[in-house]
Figure (cartoon, rainbow, N blue to C red):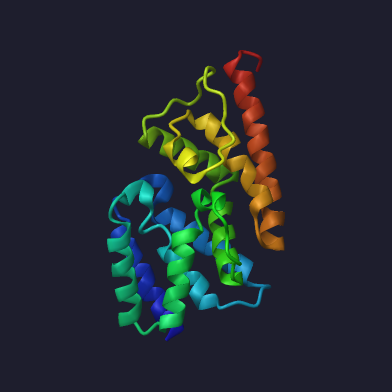
Length: 216
């Protein structure tokens, strides 16, 4: 039953993400799914809950569904109920997908379940490193943002509203979010994986700055 539910959830998500922006499309979900599988290997957890939540985590993303988040959440819950997931596990899925994003890190956090930690780490790993760089510029292009703007200083956001309202150039996003994620990983394995990806971003930024200024 568990594997069947995962397969059905996969089909449910693929259909709904077929026209998504490339940084938040099915390929993103598949990468996060693989990250989650790796993180689950040595951690006692509800594996099925983790994988279902990973598959569903971006469907009601406010960046693309402003004003429809609650409607989509109702659809998700109805799908899970129809396919036999218990009320307790549905509530766990709901909690994770509603509060795991970076913008919620500015708010007071309740204790995270191990499943929450794994899903959040799996998603954040896909936001950094080589893929993270590609995703940042893909989303920046989607929003019509500059690669960089020397007259825009990076901001250390102190609130969700400040972060969400930022329209800064893509390079600023590295300093305002991506370079912060390494130290926000929850699990030991994710922290280890994040280190290499973090260093790659630092190398990229140094090379970017050198080429931008004609020093490379």
